Image (cartoon, rainbow, N blue to C red; front, side):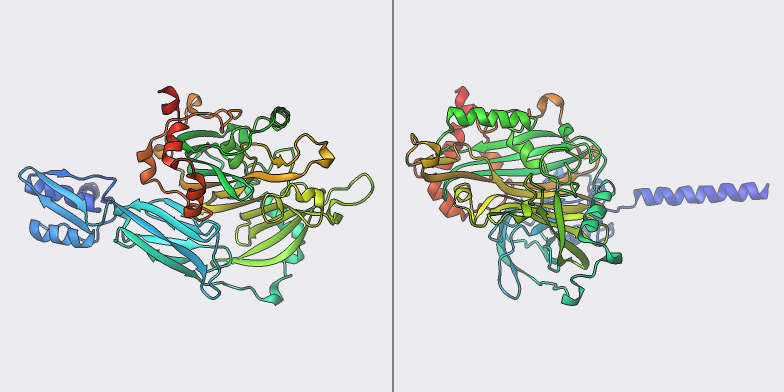
Length: 524
């Protein structure tokens, strides 16, 4: 009986403790709620402008004035009392613009596609090809840490300033590898074994459940080096995991804007050829699906280019080490090496080089980055096909680790232009006698700005809302909402924004072009 009574007393005490813990304030919002109850005022604040769900650095004080003073100081808040309300706002501006460059601390070399992550916001961006960044973030994240990382360098952590407009230069310190370590592989493995091990661990390292990604897309068309069209879009991507076919991925356009096209349009013959290619590839007219397709997500697909799985068609060699923070990363070069009917290998071709690099973490065998290219070496016929810097095509794909799994961070490269590939000086001449006057080409970048793994936070894409894979994105019309783009975080323009705008606005402003190429304008 005594034991039973002691047990009942213990349960009562534990319940009381649990109740006390439940009601004790743990966040700034908890403290403010208790404060508003004490003052008998209604609490008023905007969740988008003030971050109140963080763990409180102070305890609730029965003295209202001292509690308000501590809150304003600790959480950088401005608290105002009226007859009916307790109004909470941030001392920081509504939006903070942060711009700058990421460079090598020793050489001053610009670092393209460096990763920038704001932990509390769960969002980020990357630098452009000139190592520059320029984005806006809600003022409530002022004082939060911002992390810069780049393959081969030590990560840097800074804090977001409270000023509304700040410019910084982030100097990254390179972490070199020792030359004596270059050819030391685990257990005497060959380069191809590193690739095989990375592929073997794809199902472990990459998500197998549904993930939602917020992403930004930019497609820029050129006539030689002159900007001729730009398309930008905010996307919602729903990926059902690495075990499912890529065709199960759904993409929804949140917002989009398109400029005029100053390209020479495709001929009827070219349009028919393109339609045939699209049919053969299973429908890839939609530029967003084409951009999201990447080597890791599509590693099991049976067509075309498979450097991760086709070990007979590619040859592999060890190309050294890189560092990612304190983790050693293997750099593996792959080269297209198909056997031709005459007994020669594709890698023996002296006119072009077809291959790239795969970067694999030595810690968990995760694939951090893949670079692929087809480069002209010395062939006058292939030179006509060059788009930029001797490349016929080139892609770079980077991955990021979030909560223990790897996700796409960015993909960039060349795309088919919204027009003919070549503009000839003598278009009526026989094919062998035609002289190329201009080359038209396009670049694109897909940047994942946020990864959402909690299903409760996902805004699921319904079947009727998803984009069709065969939709011609260049021709489709969408609504245009200028106010959306005023605060949207986008990748900094590249090439230099002033030059690009000057080339695109020779006839009319970009804003007018965006309006005229929208469904709003078409329906009016």
